[in-house]
Length: 449
Image 1 (tube, rainbow, N blue to C red):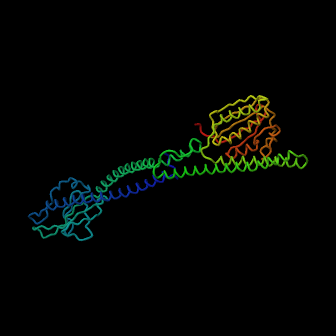
Image 2 (spheres, rainbow, N blue to C red):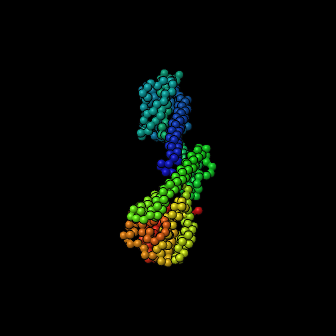
Image 3 (tube, helix red, strand yellow):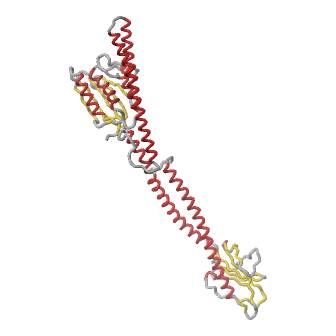
């Protein structure tokens, strides 16, 4: 499933990703603070143990002087500038200090030191950042007050915290990615019923189905029911329109037939004028009724008509009509092609083109069917006299017809063009390689079943 930026799935996944990222960032920040506090407390506990050891190993000699304490068990106190230091000071200044301090001294805190441990931070040798634990100590053998301090480099805390942060970043990053993948899978699974609706509508549009079929989830089922109800309503409206058009046709044709019969029963200039005007009215009625019927049917979803059977039926009918002068008809191309529309409209369009070709052909008519890029093209050619370029242009004007010189029925080439345009198609007239007229009818194609 491809996530488009305006899709519902993208919004759900993007929203979940933002929330997951925000939650993980807040969580990682909280974990980092907690771990840093934990490491700092452990660091302070080590300083406290070392300070107690320093006090325990300090003693007053026979001369009343403070003797240097023994080794505290950590070789870093012997290594110069190692980051771990101890110092014993009096009111006169430092009295003793670890070898690691070398010629440096620990800065005194800004607040007074008492018998209770005091923790503070200060700078150390080589720009070290030290955390110091200090307190005052007295010995019975000496009246002096000693300030004993243990210092450690805070870089250890920072290093452990950094290692922890990197581990947490990798772990939470992997967790976040996994959560987003899970959300993506959940969204894809959850929106699957919606994804079936466009496919089902495409089946209806191409004529393979007339309703939304299949089971849908409880949330999507009302939408499917409404779409099916809309399709049923559309069919009912179209059917009513067809009925009204049929009723109008009968209502108009009957008076026109009476006028025509009355004009034929009489003679004179006025009756000729009535006959001509009645014929014009009949043509206009046929024209607009055909357009009305086609306009109603062209908007119906689910219509699909195979092309070859329609051509075969028309060929049999026209062969019987023009049996007095046999015409050889060849049908070529994609016989499995289908028209996305009503059979009656296809019969009217192809019937007029084939009827025109039969009337004017000397001996041969060729029909070629092709489908390309969801467009259906039916070419009807004959070996008759054809039309000049000026005549072909005139056919494009509504009502101009050149196929009335010989007897026959049909809506005419101009009306074929009108009907095709209602289906977003068209009619192109060209010179045929057979010597006559080539009419190329372009219509929307339906997928092969």
